[in-house]
Image (cartoon, rainbow, N blue to C red; front, side, top):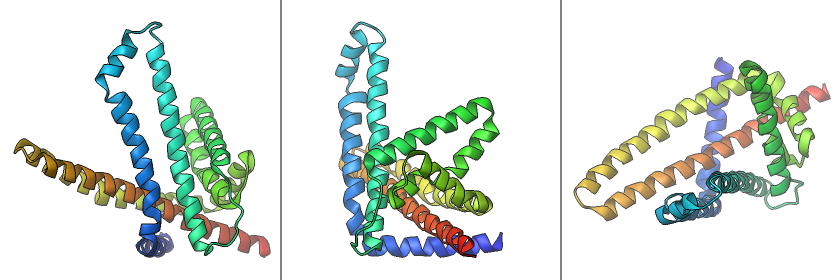
Length: 245
């Protein structure tokens, strides 16, 4: 446990230093991701007139179909967002040198395959589904970083995580606690402040608190992605050293 705590602290520091140095270079990616989600939510789900027209149309299943389509686009956008982040991190770390990485379509395919197989395992039994999800969690990362395709990406993830499963679970637990305590408690505080100033009529200040909350969530998503990138490299280094021996 102590060694995992020490490793967690080292990767945490490494991720923090990277984000401090390259925050501006990474900022454009979450910004455009936010814009996409903003216009989808505002233009579709929060558009009462459009929602009423869709619900009033026939057949009745059209509303559910359009919801599924929009949700699929948002999931694809999230995969694209994470892929772009990882590829940008790889580009910065390699100092712009040519590296073989998987593209958006490849990463999306791996992610869909990962989700479908996790669901299939979970239908059989919950525990096997959770185990499958854990050991194949680096499928998207192995595609985005090293260019592994389809099942090969999931197999490589298993190769990295299975011998390090306790370390992976500890890292995920530590990071989850840190994010929960740090980010979500901060967001909750901002929500209280936002509603307080909103009730007093300071709409611009309430909007400012709302945007601050969005920035914190997006910043946390960048940090978590960078953290798992370095954890991926750590497991990759361990596996390569074992293979050499």
